Length: 218
Length: 197
Figure (cartoon, rainbow over the protein chains, first blue to last red):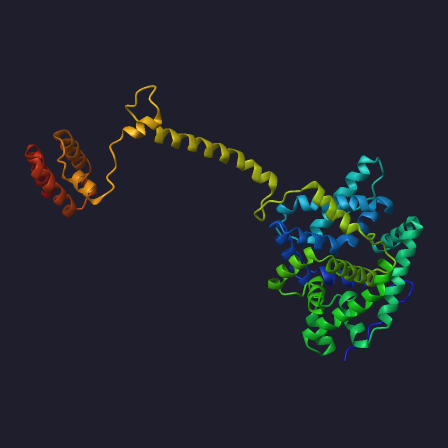
């Protein structure tokens, strides 16, 4: 039986740097699933693109907010980035992951926004270092609106509380997936159970957390 | 909204849903706002667990993007992998060629050599001998013997194209033509003899 991963401390310092690599690794299930959604959107299925927006909205807003150093305008620029991506979707051939392509569009849109507003752009060559990221996150948190900060804090607390209350098998499955970025097959191996059980456990964990979160978001 | 659908959606988020099930789910999610809401919530849960306290998109952000896309009536290419600008590049010349070809075809149909200036295309079509439509008509058309002028033209074609015909086919056609026109029998004989040497 796999050892239980430590639950994140309440100060929010748990971010795993391996996680994103694992989730976005080339040829991963997420990448393949994104590609399928892109192909469908290219054939005119708007719903498929809507799902991509839902999936990457937080990442893109966060990225743009870092670049602009102004969270209040981040959503406008992020929105523009998604619209640009939709218009250019016909040229996406799947040579890179969808998010990598989306990331480039968001960076260029943010740069254009800064240039047009006569702002000093942040030097952004290949990503911020770990230290720079944490400084920027901290700055952004302070410049965020009080209401948004309060909601964000409440969401975080609710999610953490809901995860703590999950039965152990569900908690392990959701942490291995969302924090450690393991595939269903890897989780099945680690938890010594069938892949179908993993899929069901992750779903039930999400449902339980969603039930706690729903009153907050409605 | 059944748990089975929600579980499929959860698997889609993780990239673990078989490809043949994605299409149906996407179409279902287009109609079902609650399903979309749940998907957005699952995404938020993941983001919060990975980067607690970080900046996230506000509620309704995705809906706003969708509304902007709806308003802008952004047209996607119908076929995958074709950029709209690139498509427009070759579309214009292709359309011009199609118009030109159509015009030429109409001209061929309506204007025949020998038409008098001023005579309409409709009149020209009406002047043509009636096309045989019954078996009796076809028999009558076949039985009409060719004029000497027509026979001479036919013999000319045969001589000109004889190199492309098989010897058996050529011989049978020669036989029928020669039987009708003894005037060209000598020419035919000389050609066959030369080929036989």
